[in-house]
Image (tube, rainbow, N blue to C red; front, side, top):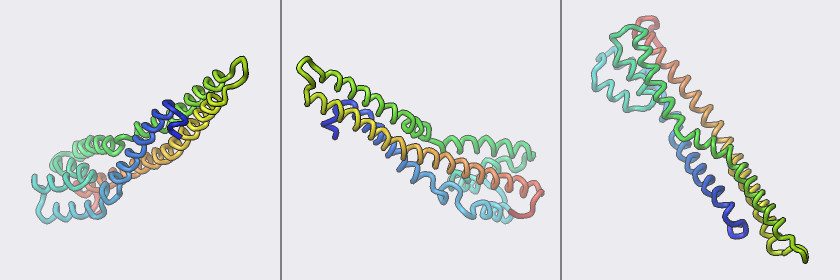
Length: 200
């Protein structure tokens, strides 16, 4: 297929390799147990009641997970007002959300341009088809090459774009749900610390 299509297929192959690498990396990185591990907030609140806040405790929480980074931002400002504590959490949350969305713009771009690259290959194939027309009729070799380029690039462009779009949308929704969950747990921490809630 690669030999029959020629150079127009190379950008599509490159796009497919990049998309596959991003999908595998994000599948490994965006696991719920890694991002918002169960029981972390309860553990933090238990330590807070029993031993209080210490630099070591805050460091351990921050190193635990992305949710830990958000909670640690609140713990560093535990003696401040509710507004300052919440603002620190929001700043940390924005940084964590940005990190969770890493490579998704690239994946979305590949999903968008793959059909266009396929269409570009179709145009190249049509040019080859028309170039095969001579005074004595069509050159069968050039005609076959033009058809191969047109069909192969169109098909490969769609084969890349469809799963890339599905995973791009899936990862975006996943990141959004993680951010909302982290926000809810962080608000619960703020409310418990400031005596507005007794438990989560």
